[in-house]
Image 1 (cartoon, rainbow over the protein chains, first blue to last red):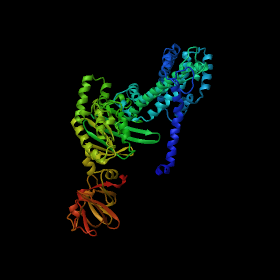
Image 2 (image 1 turned 120 degrees about the horizontal axis):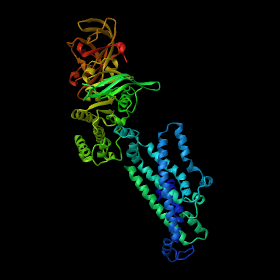
Image 3 (image 1 turned 90 degrees about the vertical axis):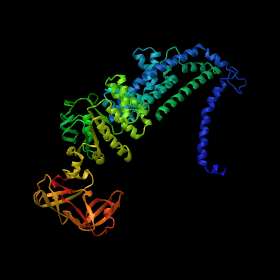
Image 4 (image 1 turned 180 degrees about the vertical axis):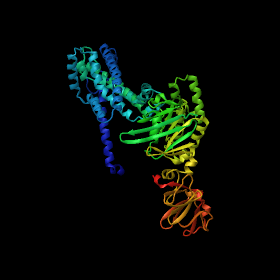
Length: 264
Length: 360
């Protein structure tokens, strides 16, 4: 016991960590707990538990449609942003000196421009070119935001690639296109996969850009926002819990896969 | 017979730095040729030019009689074993070896046959499905070698491939490389800064310095009859005695060094009295004894340092005031010798003369 108090810096370190974990998980646990509450308003104690709210949400056409729409936009965003991101990373990787830094800074810019500013500017832009708000405009906005994350992840991996792998492929008879698809791309694989997961999460979570660029069909964050405005109910908790679980599973799975490939 | 590789008046400069200068070199088919030299001597640049990764500033390169000076690496029939192997990390051993064959459009059955044949050659049959990261350094080395041999290149280029291995493994691999070269009958062009590797494996050693060829020849000739002070000191241990010619007589020269007269066979040189000259005296050519030896050159000396190395003893013997000779003798030769009073001697044929203007 005395020894434990002697090590008070270590103890403080651990205590603050656990405080942080509490701070992180308490609101989430409350949200999940209330989703099982047997009443139509949010209060404590919980009383009887039920999964009625889940049954109701799963049969909610609006909710299912919003899920589908969100997934569709996320998939399109991911596909486009990954291609553009890998392309830009390869370009930056081939540049030397100042050009490299400038190109990198420009590629990263969309990640640091505040969401609100980016959303307004894109809204003005699509109005100028007569593009209607809706699916295409949302995807456009999400892609701009997602590309820098792909670029950074892919470029980091690219820089760790031994330069003579490309030389070896060329030496064995591969032209530059075959070399890219058979050697460079597989090497970048884990980074590209990580970048894609990031794109999916960024897009499906985005509210501000979607709000400014979207049409009448709501994505999941927009639907939840609209429901919250008409009053909190355990149904919202259910939706949020479902999103939380799906996101956590995808994130952890991605982490597991990239970790495994990194060990190799 | 036509040489498989011809470098004609090759010059390569990077900005104002001349990496390779006026290189003319023919490599005969089926030979193990080593480019040997210190770092920055142009040996790796020469290899990369033959591989197609550098373009000569001037001159041309012929491969099996065809001018390949401007041909990109993927369209010339040479393959490189890279310094750190450069195995594709996401492909199995078999896939790595098959890579070059697939790109050549060889059909699948033949690829499989060739891959298992090559794996057998280096006893890695059981490792076909492994990833490179699951192999030891020596195994990776062998896979890299087989991958480069698989497409049947005119010349196999090896860029210091043993430098990443530990000393013991390096020695094993030297013997193995030479055996594989003899078994396959391939032309090997090997680049190294390690004189021991060059001496062990090569049919021909090309010694390079400052972008130029210093001397080329078979290992024994280069070792016994170095043509310049640079070659003499770079290839093996040597005593380089800066002397003056005092006279010549029937193919022998008498030179003056450190107050003593040395008789040395002149070889192809015809030195004149008054010429400055280097005498190359290998440490193992020196005998040590208590009594005066019956050889042409003999002098009294004092042992300054004695290091027992198992199968030989290495000595530093002081001659006159402050001139040290390195000697390598059998341990039994120095048993019971007094430190302060010994005879050292060597025959006149044991030395080589080099004109001093060739000094490095």
